[in-house]
Length: 335
Image 1 (cartoon, one colour):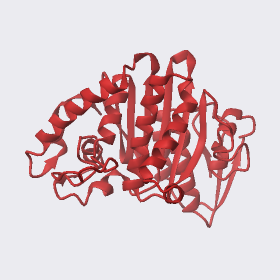
Image 2: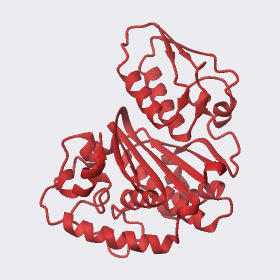
Image 3: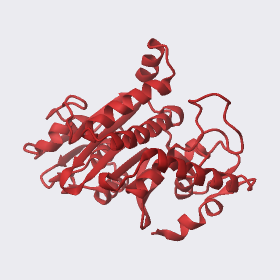
C-alpha cells in the first residue's frame, strides 16, 4: 500500500494525516511511504507526524516498510525528520547544530535528565531550567525579553512531561521566521496523555478528550490534587499553573496548541478552535510574535492574579467539569 505524505506539514495537515493513519486498514504486508508531495514542513508537524509514523511502523512489525521520493527534501532531512522515522537519510535527531533560526528535532531522555540532576546534586527542576534556557537562547537572537519568555514556557512544559506523562522521551523542535516575526517551539511526549494524567483526580469530571484539554489549562488543576495546597517553601513544587500560564502567554502574543487523544485545541487572542485527530501522548505548539510580547514579570504577575482568582472560583465546586471551569472559553470554541 502506498501512503502519500501531505505537501505541507502544517497544523491542519499533520492532524488530519495522524487521524487517517490511525484508521488505516492493517491488512497489508507492504507499506510504501511516498514523500514526493512533501514541500513545506513546520516543527509541530514534523514531531506529530514523526511520532504517528513511528507508532504505525512499530505496531506493524510483520510488514515491510519502505520510503521513496525523499531525496532532495533538504530542510526536513537537515532537521532530522527522516531519521526520526527510521529512514537512513539526512541528520539524526539532535545531530544538526541549531542556530538563531532553528532547533533541530531533538530527543531528550527523561531518565537522563533525572540522572544529570543527581550527578549535579540539584533538583531536577534546576536541570530542566538550564536545559530550557539553552534551548531558548538558540532562537532568541540575543533578545533578553524573548529569552525569558521562551525559557519560562519551555521549562513549564518540560516539567509537566517529566512529572506527569510517564514518558521516557521528550521530542522538541523550533523555528524562527524573521519575515513573519514569529517563533515556534514544538514539544511532544508519547506518554499517557492528558485525559489519563488527570483521571485519578476525584474532583474532576472528565467525560471526553475535549473536556480533559480544557480542564488541563485551568489554573491549579494539572499539578497537585485539586483543592490541596502545595508544600510550603518548596520552590519546585508543581502548583498546576504551568499549562495555564504558558497558554495565556502565547495567546497574548501568538497562539497555543495542545493535542492529546482524539482532540486538539487551538487558542489565540481572537478565537478558540477544536480539531479532530488521533495521538496518544501530548503535543504542544507555542507560537510567539516577538514584537508583541511585553515585560515578562509584568505579564506573569497579571496572569498569576487572574489565575488565583479563577482557581478560587473553581474550588467552590466539589466536582469540577469543563463547562463549570471555562464557560467563557467554551463559548468561543468553534468546531
